[in-house]
Image (cartoon, rainbow, N blue to C red):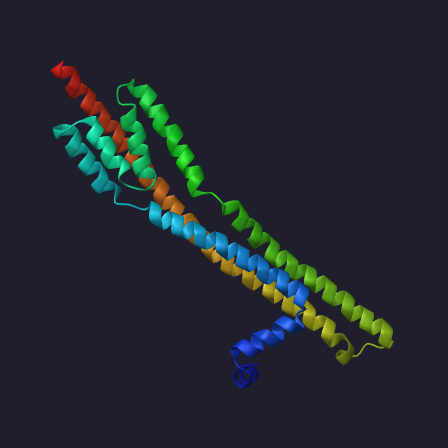
Length: 222
């Protein structure tokens, strides 16, 4: 196997196996892999852009709330990207309302932000499921081809069944490799989302504490 790859070259070897696996099945499996990777790249870019230094943002917001106005804090939050900044903006936009109302608003908006973070994950999961399924379907088709060749030859000969068995094995390997690649990126994306969600939850608690402190100080002044 290693000698064959060395003589043919990796690209040529993969091209040969792709053709031997059947252009239809291998083409569809490749298409599923490409589509799944496109969704993965889109999510990774979105999550990368959503990540900010939330501690620094909250620290700056607290300083502005002590020395400036609520409008300055809102401008600060609006000037940052990501779910934490969006939640902060929503919280300070409702700062004149009761604390319970603010808390419910923060929770509701946080859930909406989680939904945005998890967008298109279902499509990636679908591609992970479809890729090996297509590979197994190719296995069944390859076995049928092998039995058809046996029937036509009227004899069980390794040479006769080799073609169908090769299709069966190559499509299975192709589907599993595609699923493994997409599963790796899916787990990576899920890990990034979990980190952002934890960051949002911690920021929400800090925001509510900040707002409670501000309201107490405002009540004392009045």
